[in-house]
Length: 321
Image (cartoon, rainbow, N blue to C red; front, side, top):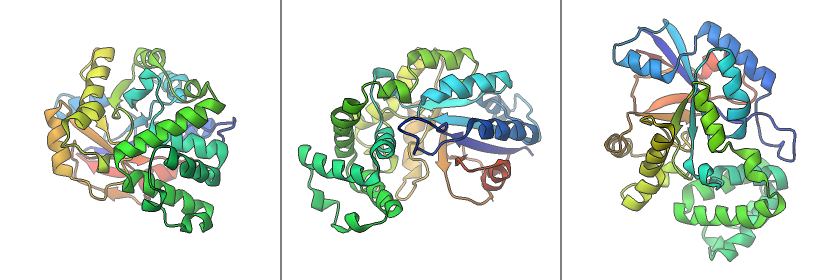
């Protein structure tokens, strides 16, 4: 039996006007990777696939690491460093970034980081009216009295669970164009890698996965609607496969740690029919666990900025395969 853990990373610590975004200190990241590689040698997803097919042996204990959202630091910092360590990682991106569009999750993160959570609430109130949304349908007036952490949770609950996906998309794209881009016209180049960055990642022998088109809240996605499915799931796979000249068969669920109401069987069937062979979840809850391996529900621990190496082992889902 081989013991396997999966880890997911996002932001590097910033020092600009978006420094409120939680990110890893680079030295901490490097230290964790070095210790992880020693205790749980990091293997590539390609080798892991061969292992599942009985065509390759892996160490008795090993790990796989991935990076979500197509962030600039993935191409400029993490990918080159991992190449130096002879480590191959998986980079999952929403394809909207390749056409110069900001995904909704980054609109939330970067606006709350720049303006603060209470000011972001005021922007929401203003642009609810601009986009013809009824504030009282989603907020009850208590939000102005909530302390910051609870207010942030309230905002995320509305945007990620209560509002229809198309309305969230319109609202957040309007906020991006009318507020964030207005105040920082170079914001996209500060947040994401572009096609050249994607090429760089590939040249450094890393792998690519699909993370939808616009990073919607996947539980509320109307996957029975062919237009929605094609836009968010099928077309991104085709775009990335064409660009990389590879068969992109790994999908990473957006907001993978939110699973209430998730229809696993339906998603599995539709992903399989669309050419995917693996699907990655991401969770933030703490506590070591062991689960039966399922290629369409691979549990990745979403590494937090405060995590040290012992936390990675303690919180990761351990698969015995």
